[in-house]
Length: 228
Image 1 (cartoon, helix red, strand yellow):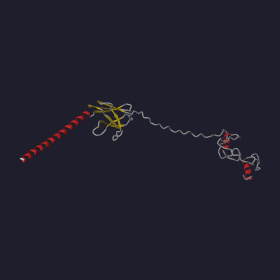
Image 2: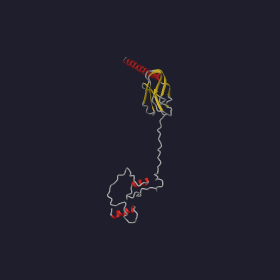
Image 3: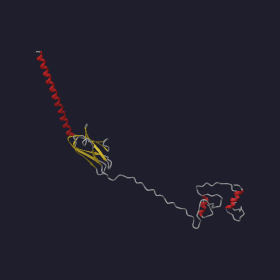
């Protein structure tokens, strides 16, 4: 009697285990079917990107069987889509504006709905912004060197150099050069010069060497005699 009772219990336990397994399998399949149907309803279809003619924006559009609120994640690097554009409400006819964009640049994007990410079979969708030709290219102005103007001596005057004592004062400086250029007996000192006052014992009108001519040699003779 006890043996028969044990067999009945064993059969009942076996039946329960079988039912649990069957129900578990059916439950998993039901969940998978439900999730698959839900994903199909929200999955973006006919995904398109339409860049604007001015190269400043683009609109991304798609449709879905179920009303959802999507997010477009985009950027210029397919591995770093840090920019986001979000729909303002749930809809089945989606269109999101991406702005501002850079002209003549390729952008990568994907669509996020809730926790689900949709892209082009594992890689981001792409579009390229038109090149409008409105980019400002800095222009480097050419450097024009002014021609060097040579200083000419007055008509009939000898060429002037900076190594001649034209005013016969025993000192060669810019006053002599200006004296030659002006062709006059009055020197025009340079504004940059600071005149130095020194005691000069030599008379520029005295014939110190006694050769009958008063010139710079007389001053040199005087300076040598005075050991200046």
